[in-house]
Length: 221
Ligand code: DC
Image (cartoon, rainbow, N blue to C red; front, side):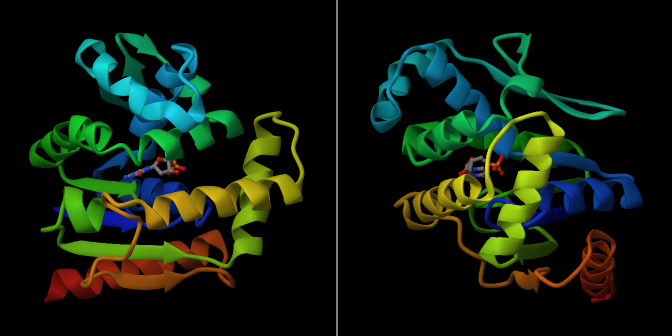
């Protein structure tokens, strides 16, 4: 069983996917972590954000892998666990930049597909329903208005002790959404057969309930 959850940043994909995966006993795959890890690599390699295509010659010496523990997914960069290093606003912007490079998307494609071949998954990202798992049995495109998304993102960052403001989060989010939606390769758009779920006015629990209703309807068909 493959469940694809796509949508813009801050829509709540991660919490929703994690909760649904626990509900059904599936693995939750957060694909954004893969792009974030390559963003971290680019930053460490001294590659400027507007020249991230310079990461291409490095790809042959990079290994990015995911492991799944009872506490959730860990991501390894050449064997180093970088899970806790990739959640900063700086890495978010780098991830968005590297994710527009077609060779980077190709590089990460098989990692994602092979996990879905081996396990039942709830996979969250931007192009899961369109490119990575076009044959997913359930596809949800999760959206919320800008203010709702920025407020949630701000709360997440504050929880991690990262100091920022709502205005800064709104501006970063707008820039990242624009990059992700308008890039030439695998833009972050809903698959034709995705169900659109707007959770601007929903609590987390109500969002989970709505998603489970969508999944159950699809499973009965
Ligand atoms: O979901 P996230 O915020 O962790 O993702 C970080 C960036 O990675 C996001 O701005 C776009 C990119 N991304 C992508 O292009 N495709 C995916 N499947 C997941 C993330």
